[in-house]
Amino acid sequence: MLYERCVLIIKILLQSGRAVTTGKLAEACSVSSRTIRSDLDMIDQWLAGFSHEPVVRVPGRGVLLSDRDGTIKKRLEEKEAGSYVMSSKERVRAITGIILAECDSTSIAEMAEELQVSGATISNDLQKVKAWMDRYCIHMVSKPHVGIAVRDSENNIRRGCVMLLREILETGTRQQELIGMGFTQAETALQTYRMVSFCNTLRMWREEILLIIKELQERAQVTISDNGFCAMFLYLLTAFTRMKAGHSLRGGGQLYPHVRQQQGFAYKEIHQLIREHTGLEADEDEMFLIHAEWMSLRKFGSSHDINVEHVLIAKELIAEVKDSLEIEFQEGMIRCWNWQPI
Image (cartoon, rainbow, N blue to C red; front, top):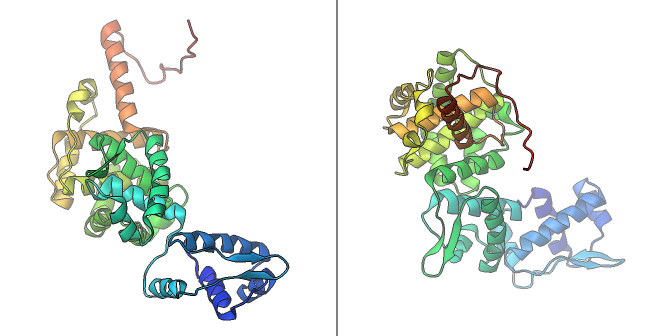
């Protein structure tokens, strides 16, 4: 984002009309010269967003900024009127959210108009978006006359949404603050990152999601950590947003029959909770995977490395081994094996 201090620096340079030393800028902003140099790099990044030349550094004299056609002044007026100017990192997250969760397909031109930057800037950002998608094994495609879209399983898309929400809301460091404020900061962040459908779900069912998690804890007679609470909140927020938009999971219950049969895995109970608090009608697969997420959080906390699908696969493999060998594992019997190449 373009911080207010950056705006002040730009205004000082434009009003001066000549080179200003970093020392004078630092004095005007009550910060160090090193901070000013960092701010100037951020200003250059903002200027590049609409193809404007960077701040000119003149050795021995200072820095100067030219606005011959008034573009910079116009952009600042838009910002002060409510337009939010994103940093490159924020813009990449916004593009990721748009492609991943907000539309079936989009184009460079549409995203450039939405984020008020050039098409060249969006094209450059898409390389970082692609790298992010690859990191989480999510398949993004770009085809002429079709657009840019995600073509992957609903489960993978939801997992990607949760990971993106973690990054946007910084739930690894500010869980208690977010919960304590009723997630009001989350709504602002989602609006900023153009995740409109998630913002609408948050407005509609924020309190209901909090109540569902509270009731899950009471029924299980457990108290999960703040981090686990936030993880479950984001999972339910994602599930409800996708369900509301008509995207459903398929095959969850059929994929893990042994897990469904385990004692204590009463996943159908969650259906009543969700229907009572939101009115959403979820199918059996939805209930199965939501309950599986809840069980994995209780067992493993909310580690970013734990994937509920991997947990289910592990449970299924253990069940198959038990059936094949006709043995019964007890709590604490399973240890990590040190695999050696043959």
